Length: 544
Image (tube, rainbow, N blue to C red; front, side, top):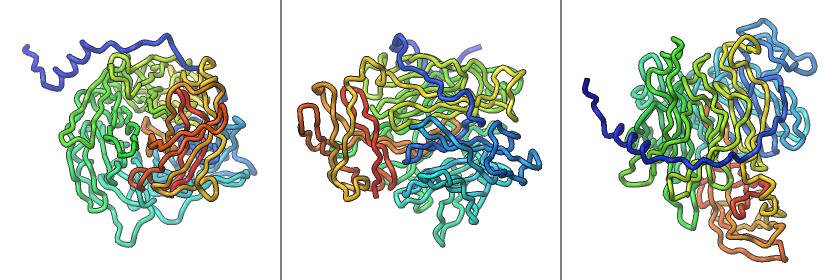
């Protein structure tokens, strides 16, 4: 039988022949924070008070963490009375946590931070599929989930959220939800039909849930589902542009890959904008997994320069295949890829061969053979329903993994995982401690926290040694992470106007804030000073 080689397949075969990933002798360090926090970390959101809100779902059955003060829910679809928690608030500094109470099912939901730093959380399953919930950070032990009286217009289960320049959220897609809507709604708002979501739905498998959303500096929304992507002007409900399909495998749930918008450099003009998509699974892999046949995951990553007049995907190969990866943009402007499996797809017991080694991807390395490095492995499989997020000190918080309908701890290959870990990338290694800056102050705002668009402000920091090389200042938006997608993840490399030496080992770097809300939507950001590839502990600023 003759084999027909499409142009995309020829491209991938040529890349595989030429590819030779740079394999480090490990690097990075794993630390177990808690053997069990009582719930499985399916969703994560870092807040500006250095706490992380974590939750799974209410219809797993009772968790291993009791609600305080005799609280119970009586509206559960699984058990008539549930007095256990399905959400926690994790304190990064003290490595402690406390239980929170969600009122309806938050399974496979979405979220984003509002400009005031509150989590706006949307959708879920069962009685939670139309719900909007909020969590506002507090300095005491009293804040908890609030469920709002206003509902979403349609059910949102496996949808994605993005913060917009005006501070509203756009909620896109979900199972059998071929539309988008806004929160809060304007009087003229309704549900907007989005034909692209119909066109990208595969028969039986879907492969377009949790679409990847990236707000571009022109204010329009890049939307990726399955293998296709478009540029959406949500203000007039019009698709402005169709991008070429990514070669190779499917990339959206349940053939789950991951995506990140690569760092945007403001120097002083806005750099070209690139979107990167990694991992995924072949079409049909989900159906085969239900039969006990686990298809090898995708090894490919694609980079698309979405600001080019005629963009094309530039494909690269990871050292190993991965489905359900998490892509986290580091304060150094590199990307770490972790979690996931080597075979199968997302879904109940649908994947095998956990991939334990993180990958470091050097975004600006000119030699493609040196961009990927294999880092030290964890010992804990992180499969379906795991999550990861960047912490203010540069570590990655990792948790979750429950590929079962209920909590299952025995008698299965991959038990429900209740642990929390932290991964310290190589830049936090002891050999580089002397290079790490320490931020002393941020100057340029009346309250030491709030800055305006286009404003000049300064960051004063100290070093342990004389500086080696240039400094960069990066601004990172905290992401809402679930199902292998860090929603609203964004890193900006600020324009450095001047560097001043204050004392022998103390310096002040003067930077320009992002110019518009299209470039940096209003809200809280972590600011890092990076010296010789090593980031400081961040400080929080608010831009509005």
